Length: 262
Image (cartoon, rainbow, N blue to C red; front, side, top):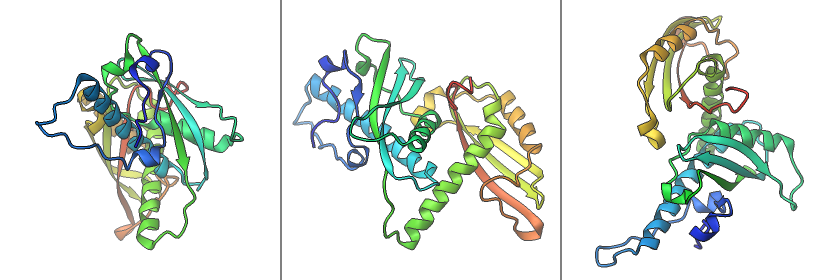
């Protein structure tokens, strides 16, 4: 498979191009033994390929989970990040061969602002302080799903929707200066009123070094959670003894939600 990334010389002038997210996710890197030492250019290329696979994996996973409407199509997403690996903008690059689909473009921007991407190797920035990444986001037609596959998709869609619900009600209203995930465990009555809530903060695998254990944030989130009404939460279900019990994972970062959040 040809390299999905531009050469170092081209990167100084052009965005970093990630070609074919779904195809890229299946690429394999050839193993190198000690008898085959890598040149400096080969090492840099491996770093590029590794970053591209990780970046693509995050987008593919989140686009899959966010597409509860079953939208079909593709858009070219343009993401700008800085040397601190903070997302600065999420835009749609015009494609002369495709008619714009506003619902797809809106969903793609939402997924971009919600995603916690891996750190880009410093070498990919060159002498510049910012870098643009252009990647196609594909929302495929879902045909002939088996029962397990359909259930897996429904579970992912529900988990994403619940995460966004908690984000808008809690973390989206809080200033955050680190990257992590809030694991929320709750018990609510049949009317949706929260009776018990426990919030734990943990690092995210892609950005573990950017996590800070913030006990004040944890306390504020717990207090907010206890004031919530979950009747409008997607997938709200009342179980034994008239209680709803659940777990929700909410990722957070200073840029999550986009400019309107900041």
